[in-house]
Structures are given as C-alpha cells and as structure tokens.
Image 1 (tube, helix red, strand yellow):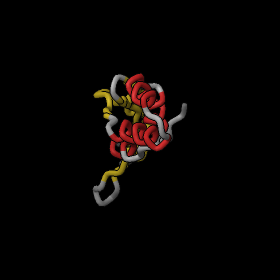
Image 2: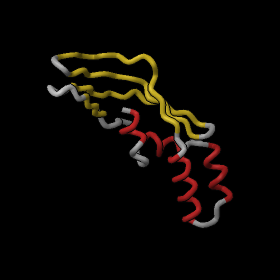
Image 3: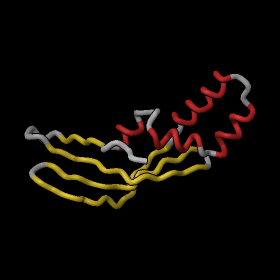
Image 4: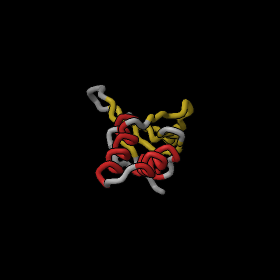
Length: 106
C-alpha cells in the first residue's frame, strides 16, 4: 500500500506537505528561476518518507477480502503530515495478494 502511494510523486498528500514545509519554503525563497523552484519541489517529493501506523483497523472482512483503515504519515524535512487511509486487501484464488487504496478525500 505504501509503495502505490509513494510511487505517485504527485499525490495530494505529498503536494500538501511540500506546500506547507518551512524547509522547502526556505529553499524556494532563494531560487530565482521557475525551473529551479520546480527542481526543489521535485527533490522534496523524491525524498519524502512514508510510513503506516502499526495499528490497522479491519472494517470488514469477507472471503479473501478485507477493508481496512490505517494512519499514513509522510515526512518532508521539518514537516510531517498524516492522513487516514482506507484500503482493500484481496487474496486471489491463486494466492496472490493485491492492495488498492481509496482515493484521498481532503
């Protein structure tokens, strides 16, 4: 689940963290060109650290499917943001597990 969110470097949570980070704002204040500002934001997104809280709530469970909620944290420099995330874990007949994340609602 973390990988699917972290692989999307333009997800709403990372954009929010970049826009509200004092460390990123300080770097942007010294940048002159738009390309330099974009590079600073891209680097911050690339360096973001994602984590999922140890407590995951299973909201419902049926044959091979669990609907869950967990607290996702993201850290960029001096800024940490958190968002409750709903996701679905499904085990197929062949034993493979897939995870899908419900889109963020802000």
